[in-house]
Length: 468
Image (cartoon, rainbow, N blue to C red):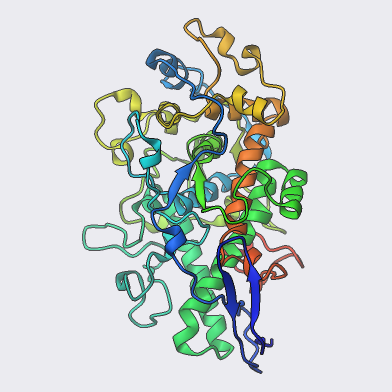
């Protein structure tokens, strides 16, 4: 591979240009990526939330209306059983949650917020594995190997932990449950594998970490856009977005932000996909996400995940399937333990559904019908959302719940409908396209360099279950 011997400049929609100067290098580095010059962080200081649809008014709902939907026994409770999706593997909502942690960190209390403009996103609005790398080995050396400073520290099958069992990671949410902590381990292993490959190819020691970080991030972004995106919104809508780009989100020169309609509404669709119990490996019995798989403690070897049971792998039996998106959540999410939600005055707030609904009201989200009208879509009727059967219901539908019911009606719960698909698709593509260090901005012709089981098709399974 040649490192370009001329200065290359590319405009990516910000108020600066990326300039990269490279020299001929006859040592082929399989995982080398074009490296942008250090980008200014000024545009990302005080990362913010914003509105994708600023015109529709907030949907104002009473507490009794929210309880009718979100409490145990309400419309969102799937404790009496549910159906599994045909085409969605069980690992996709876990990976989707990982992306949410990477893009957003909202540390405000679950209350009504008078000033949404004052909300601060404590993560940069980039899909850049910030929740894996933190601030890097210089700033957070406790997360990196003392023996090999370019590698992330692991403890066998588990995350590294201190003497009290607390995970040594940038974001404690990455240890919230076993599938999440195991995904953190899997991506750390991918990074360490890239370090080994780059070292074998002669990359200087002082460059190894940044080269491997960039390569891992680009593989991760590839999986988001070519794996999760078509699974979530459908291959045709995904292909159109990747070809034409977003039309509503992040115009050129606009300061990056995360829309509240995404963070507190549509992107929470994955909560409805989480299945009630999981087989972690071929030797174990099925375990519930809560309380069996609650994290924040050392992981016993018998709970180490075999990712072939969570994602489809060519040549292997199909993985477990995710729950259909149908407006309801499994029992584990309707009664979260104190280890996750903390001590709450209102026991009803142990319901993730009620927390999602309260969050949407607290951030002033518009109704799902209002967003549908803004997009030129025919809104669902009360009979279609099921709200006509709630005697206390007045007004329109919370955006989060609307997105779930829309998916159920438009695609039998396999993928998102037009409102949910537009919001999720536009934001995921937009944040990667407008990231000056993403592969779409720096080198749109880049393709994954790690081995894949199918030629020309790199998947999340290739990242987590190596085939080399």
